[in-house]
Length: 235
Length: 289
Ligand SMILES: Nc1ncnc2c1ncn2[C@@H]1O[C@H](COP(=O)(O)OP(=O)(O)OP(=O)(O)O)[C@@H](O)[C@H]1O
Ligand SMILES: [Mg+2]
Image 1 (cartoon, each protein chain N blue to C red):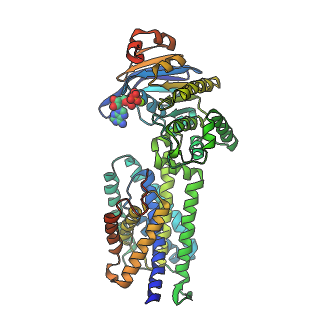
Image 2 (cartoon, rainbow over the protein chains, first blue to last red):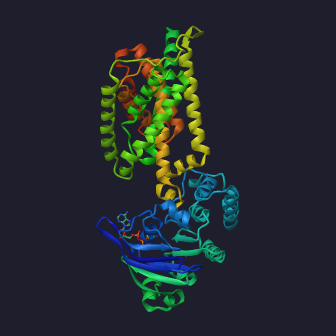
């Protein structure tokens, strides 16, 4: 397993946002978390990234226990997150945003190579390179946020609602980009409001309900599951 | 009359440069750690004493003393960041206000106890060299203050704009969580920020200690005026802060020269009150995003 999460519990004050969540992410796979608003999907990712401290449980990433590491060490170990709501730095240029995504990387050539491959995925960013990120359209900012997350060269990429605000045709492109990123050896955790899309591309899926894992299985199996179809696919 | 006006304006600009140095450091700390550091004036005061002792006890020339004081206060800044401010980063502003106010009082009193209250001057060896042009008197000392401030501000602007650490500082001030997710070591950047803030304050204190004098309570009014400057200048805007600093320097110098010298410290605050009534969005109107 690349990532092994065991009995992860995270609280916001008295609110228990995650309750003994266990998730396995095999190397090279795409794993998706689905669940209603407030189920705890973003909290899960922030806990893995070390931005929010879990109150108990363990997180093991390629043999390292990381639940108590600071966020920058977690990034250096190879975990990157594209957070919900883009969160690009609005007063910095597109190029600066991407460069900062590679903060943990040493070596100018490596950064340059990554930059080229990211600009290859999202050619529109090349045209906008010197523009302030805050002046990009919502969809362009989303691409920038994904590109920035790729700049650290992660072994595990976590995408929190990457398709939010993207036009359908761009979402299709995003799906193929996600597959391509995986082909290049990056493992992916995907959170999506669009559960149908997520289940289609995921190898494994977990269903979260008020902080608990209530179901898990192959993406294709959950697509056929009656409860999932009713609650999350609306069919 | 006109020459007096010009003379006071020149002095105001020089004063403004000093305020720019203290206010920029304060504004960096405010923007990046989101803490209000009321002990900033004491970094300035201690910096002045460090330079004073370097000249008096070590016999260091002025520029070396300035450098020594900047280095010591950079380290001191990083230490108080670690020990005092880091535990309260992310907590409501009132925490840092109370804590730093306490720290300010403690440092000022320690300085009073150890360094004594009698005002002393830092000897720059430049006060005797005088220039005259267009009927204005300037000492080499004041000219050096002007040039040094411009150099330091330019260096800071360059650092923030072009270096990796500077970009990380901007990233943190615009979105701290995104900075963490990008792998930026925010704790290290916090230390660097406080170190820069301490060094700039030390430079300002040293220069004031040469033009005017050094005393344990010199930090009190400076920290308040620096807050006025960053409020006027719009938080987080270097250009706005410089502009506001010079306006405050001019207000103080011209008000002191033409209205009444005893109220010189009041003019900046009057200006602030006026500005709040006329332009609540700040001078430049730029809000920190
Ligand atoms: N900063 C916070 N302080 C307090 N409670 C929070 C905070 N962030 C999230 N929560 C709570 O934790 C729970 C899980 O939130 P989370 O954002 O992880 O859900 P989510 O599954 O990502 O939802 P969405 O689909 O809307 O993005 C919610 O009940 C939410 O109210
Ligand atoms: Mg969420």
